[in-house]
Image (cartoon, rainbow, N blue to C red):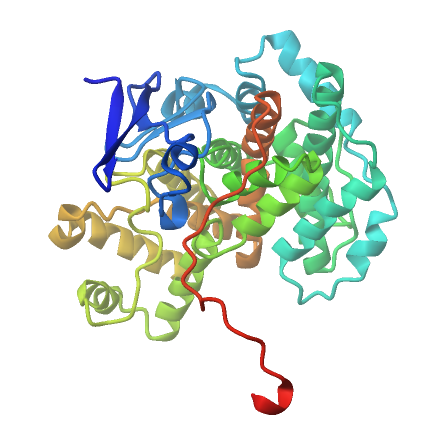
Length: 428
């Protein structure tokens, strides 16, 4: 293969270098396009064909159904690692030793108390407020209580900022949930593991002891691992572009939360349950809705099947399907919504229309089932996604700052009015 690409414009040829990644992905480096061509740019709506950075964090091959964090397969990490080990791996580049993992957890727990004044901000929200809006606001507010900027050239300062957000974020997640449920706010228990503490902070009732369920702990641990990073998606690229202005870590992550909120991104698992609710209200006939999904003239869209990136089976879905089955079996839940979900799943896995198009149930489909089984309200699903994605956002922000990437500044193709004279108001 040539090491350059040639672009011809108006009989003038321009050469641009090709770059090859460690997984043999090839890109055309057009960083000098405007200067070489006298101002010509590319147009790539949604940046579907444009690499915004060089990253060593996550590799994703949608055609082959591959997802790796720092070179480790998602299948092996989900089976053998816990969430904190994966968080350390994503952020710092290597799996931690036992001593590093224990120190990481100890340091996170030391930062798990949130300033009491944040409660006043939380109290100002009505119960009707969407939890993602609340979480984004509380995360942004952390900046006010931690005003000093992070010295990215100091490993110590960077580490302190990382353990601070890792410690405080689960508290904000739990508070957001408990506010919605009308429960007293809880700081959790330092004697517990990271995931166990999240569950206790969210679900402990004020008048009874909270008992851990290992099946739920393991399922949530896997879900958080599977959601921890996913290359340059909408929220991650938002974190990087906000951080490229040298905005702080908390502000950048708050922006990522807002990006994650949308139903085409992190809100997809909420959209799955809302679809299932609608099917139930219409009588619960799964065959009717499978037929609607196959009818190109019907506006109905089957949520939770197929994936924008994966053109094969979502590798995360293979892992979490087993956990979903275990959670439902352990809890012995009888829920018509979950029955509808299982019906859709079975039909899609057998129907040639879906199989031929590789429209398999994705991670959003199964995560929604698990969260509902655990008793997490539908509008909290995306908050749980954010909890899992936190270490990925941190890792991407840290990499971007350490690489001294320039401020993000996309171009555009202007299609508005050309220059025209101003009309006085009585002539308009």
